[in-house]
Length: 227
Image (cartoon, rainbow, N blue to C red; front, side, top):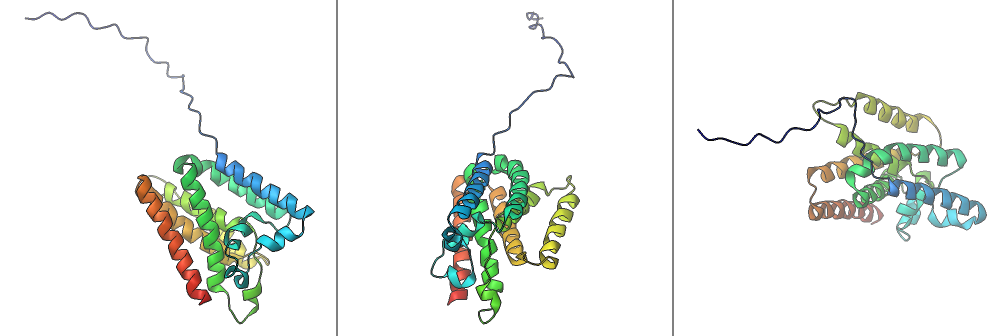
């Protein structure tokens, strides 16, 4: 029979009331986008040409494609800005730490582009919709909601509250004048797609290929419409 030394005495029993504090990463990209939108809004009040430079309309996108992104930093008025920034803060701080900063940037920008591509696709080249101007971050924000839905979807998670929130906001786009429901739908679809692709793999090269693929598809659709 072999003899073993006594085991090292265990430490004190864990305190069930003690909680480990884990500091969540700051949503620096979300904060930066909010600051940028506020800065652009303020600059627009001082320089009226800024809005004309960034605003999107289908007839302008072909020769000035930067408007597909630039218009997401413009807002029609103060309350339009406040509402979008509040929504951006709520969903941005929830999902930016999950995706990481560069994936979150790509998700946001692709959703913004997707919203304007939807406006382009659904516009009538012979009608007033071809010359209708679109501004705001709502298309990009809807994309973030789409990605949040992908993250929240699971066998043990109830996504009903999120679906209700999305449904209410989508309906508002159809019943309230002056809201671009096309941008909301387009941003949401791209957010769902990009969110799904980014959660399928965490490998950087796979994510980059997915992002480039979505961007190429949006560019191809736009070129097809303009041709």
